[in-house]
Image 1: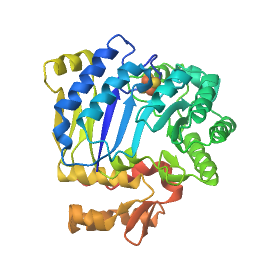
Image 2: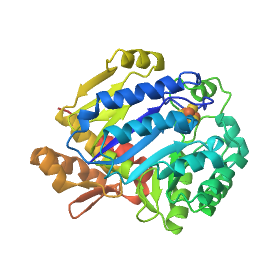
Image 3: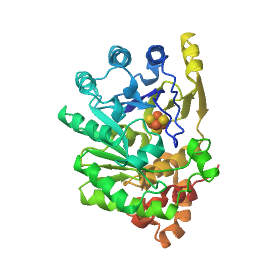
Length: 376
Ligand code: SF4
């Protein structure tokens, strides 16, 4: 199974916490869509013989594209790839881009899942994040996508924000649940270096993030969403039964994907590659039929550590049989030896042939996974 990821590197405003690749200079949108289409054609053989199950437009802000711009890429996909097995076709959309006319266009396209960048239903949160939308646009977008019959909607929320009280967080989750989305991704705010937020904290203009508060908010989130019938299938992701995100799940399971557009990453089982994170240089390179790619061949320990990290973040955990088949009994035995103390401390659970993070340690999954990494 394989997926295609398409990175649309434009946003109306720069959110203060964001370190994704995007530009707020929008006049190259059309030529960038043409370049992405060309890259898809240049690289289509990388997926030859593989079944494409999912396509994901991420960013940046894919919904910033006009229908005629998005159609250039959609037509290229239709004309050059076998899409007959695609079950999930996602577009990330920001609330301020959602209009009746845009949804009517999307309804006539192959896109069958919308991931809405809501982040918060609180005006003060959206203001200090520097989001392009306000609370009424967030609520209106959710009502409109429901009205237009989209039955696979994901929404993003953020917690652990400075000044976010537990009461406000509970109210935020309750508002999200009132729209009954099929999927919720909730991310703990992390301060990425060189962002406006990192700078503000450094200068004392904003309080630092408190991990204990974020952990309580993670527990509140989990409790409320489990009670509402969602499956907590990955640390940051919750879904109604049958609505787990296919694209993300395949990524965590180590399936292949082709990533196109500036800064997009690709993975083919043995190597990881990524495009240059610079729009003008990406355009120039593709116009000259050159792929602006950097490639890294993964070592066995790279692959093993990635498997540990992604598996431990999921509800399925590490499958020791699969791990042994892929990496051999030496690595498996060493892993079990390293895991012994973590099991005794109640941070890991070993149930039959699966190693999973214990419920009370879920918030620290990444740190626990890195304790199990193997060198060489
Ligand atoms: S809209 Fe998304 S990609 Fe764009 S700046 Fe905000 S968080 Fe980053």
